Length: 64
Image (tube, rainbow, N blue to C red):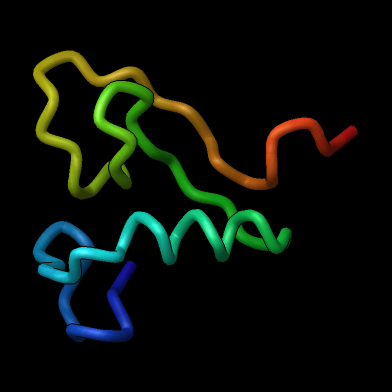
């Protein structure tokens, strides 16, 4: 996945608001991504030694 602001792969993105933009996109529905529960970063940006993954796809409290 690529960042549309800096034009870099997410693993090399330098934008300080990337996580915020990913969360907003997921909260609108129709978009999901994997992130680490510990550092709250997209899996391509996580540097945790033992990451714990979760799927972010919609606001908490909504869904099936």
